[in-house]
Length: 135
Image (cartoon, rainbow, N blue to C red; front, side, top):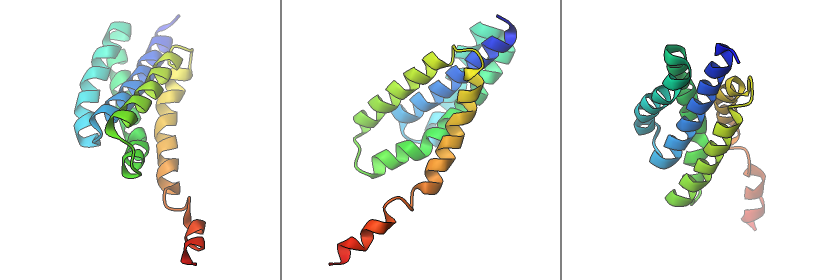
């Protein structure tokens, strides 16, 4: 495999670490510095500087992309431990999928896109049920 493969793996692992740290720490301001350091350190053994950079960028994208999901779960009554466990399992799946060629790049890009989509749809999901509550 070429260097492009390992850079993609580092980007995917970084995104998974970003999702994991956000699920555990629950605040993006606290999770971003931790994610930057751990994702860069995780990417270094695979592809040195390019892997560390890809891991750090993937980590930031993963943490920012998972923010609406974690905040929404906690705002709707989810427990901290349960949310961390479910987000941790999702991060483990992301980490495993990042070893598929080219999928690491796509995962690092897909997590923030899905996060933005979830943020836009947050207010419109159950707007029609308010009419039923007026009886």
